[in-house]
Amino acid sequence: MSSINNVKQPTQESLEIAAHALQAGELVSFPTETVYGLGADARSDSAVASIFDAKGRPSFNPLIVHLPDQEQAEQLVYFSETAKQLASHFWPGPLTLVLPRKPNCAVSQLASAGLETLAIRVPSNKLARDLLALSKVPVAAPSANPSGQISPTTALHVAAGLGGKVSIILDGGPCEIGVESTVVSVNDDIVTLLRPGGVTREQLEKLLGSIETAAPDSAITSPGMLLSHYAPSCPVRLNATGKEKGETFLGFGPGTEEFETMNLSSNADLTEATANLFAYFHQLDKMGSTAIAVAPIPNVGLGVAIIDRLQRAAAPKE
Ligand code: TXA
Ligand code: MG
Image (cartoon, rainbow, N blue to C red; front, side, top):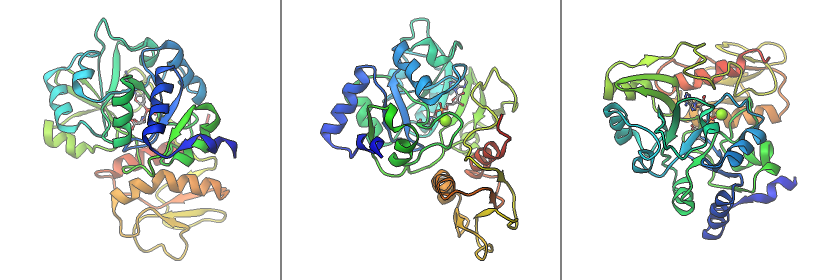
């Protein structure tokens, strides 16, 4: 596959190539602790437009801007006291804050999909941080997969989905967390969970007390939460306790060994299951599964993010 030629091991040289590509308005894929991102200069309308184009992403679905630290974020958006508290507690790490844009915000309106807010995240992955530091570019980056498909947790997933469309793919190995960041909007002291992810609700509520949840169909607060998403190309059945004809069974925890094809975590560890989720979906898809049945997952901690992605994978495709 020719598209694999642009997968590069991280070296000073490949980092410099990637940084220059970003500065030149090109697309670069890089690892984060959650999933691989498809990055471009967030200040450039044409660079941001090329992200939507490469992914086939609807332009009403805004992007997350990646920055090295909170100080840089404060040049783009307003931080309430609560937002500052969240940033100092969870950054760098898998939390995205949706905050009001400043009038002089340098980020393209396209990245905000015309909203008055901007989503910002400070990743902890070392390669991502090195790239942000070297390029000095605020990087708009959705997950590096064709829109609606499974998010990539390895460089080869990116190469298989979008390889020919990016200048370079930095290979940082498998992503540590394996699902996307948690997205919250912060309106003064009101925090609303828009997408469950790598930071759990329990962790957020330990810091802030109880937080709000966006209504599932609130298009305004969460324009990107399209129902069918993260989807393999075959039907997915949830909460399965057995295997029906033609299905491949994806287990969780012990007890289904005799009919499972893979197990997200045989000792029912949610962190391990999260790290395996997308990679296993990629594998099942590649194996040509025609139907996937998934064992029940506990609805706590990281299990909430797993269930969210599974429900989107199982939703009817429009
Ligand atoms: O872990 C992650 O967040 C990964 C890595 C690459 O950082 N990125 C990622 O981006 O998952 P993406 O584009 O696949 O998801 C961004 C989510 C979408 O659900 C989008 O609707 C929401 O963030 N979002 C972005 N800006 C928003 C805004 N201004 N208001 C509300 N939601 C927003
Ligand atoms: Mg995505």
